[in-house]
Length: 466
Image (cartoon, rainbow, N blue to C red):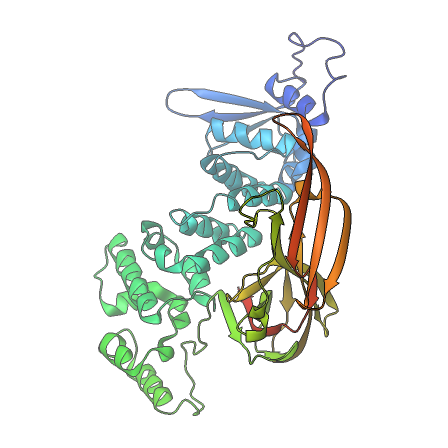
């Protein structure tokens, strides 16, 4: 066993957490017992490690160093650079994956080889934060190749949200056929099907060129493999199908005939190989009849409920004036609208799930209001029936700093005006002159009013089927 303790002193561990102690062991090569070698035409590079730490993290290293075969003291690495392997070892020793996009990808490639599942999860979470339109296809390709399910889901959701832009990127042309199949299989890959079809044909033509094959229709079809069957060709209009698909040799005569039969009579039971499931947008809205505080609806597929829309068009809602504060010390008696605002407070209940949430949202007269839930609510599909009930209160909310100054509040009802008048008296400090002055505020309107609000729609997110 190699021992290198010249650069450390007794007690160096006392003020360090475990991760920093392990990093020091690695960087200073203290008490290492295995050497990884990297050979090139110019030189041989050595990277040292500790078998017990490596075996504690990886079943591959455990079998390599403590299996039935002879214990290895030197391991030659041919599929990674010394720099990448050092980065990988540091992550293995510390679980610190605060890396840039390129570095985390290199760590993923090595961590997959040595079956470090926990480290792969950390890397996936890190990489998911950097998904953009220009790299989404590359990250999805990586997730599919290494079977990183969490990262694949995040990448697919991003692709669904930006499908039109992503189909135009060079990265789309470079994905594997397996990744293309994953993309096309998603019911929420929502774009014009004709555009998706054309981009896939372009992708297939590019693959033919890469393999030095003639870009014939048959070779394109072969390049697409079973991903071809996730093209929703039966959903195309009759004109688009005839003009762009039927006049090619991408389908056999029998396949094309069946699609024509289906389009002529969708109720016929046809053995279609291409999916007939209509793609759905990620974000969608269900419009509902108004005049109800309780609604029932059927859920055909799994959705995440994001919020509900409220009707603000009822005339009786607009009889109220937006409340204002009037200062008696103001000569013009103009309202100070910075001192008050209107808000909706309420409770939303989904009876069948037991879900209950309170909410607060600004009140916008004559503009449809949307109540956004703080958390997504999963509602299962298969035409399950759900009932949503809503209780709403309209009230005023005051400037917090102003509330701290209020004293001696009283409210009196004026029957002649059929409204409430509230007077607020407060002794406030004038910061500029440091003098105490009397401030009298008259509030016109209503501090709180319960009334009927009507649900007019639901906003939701379709759950990906990948």
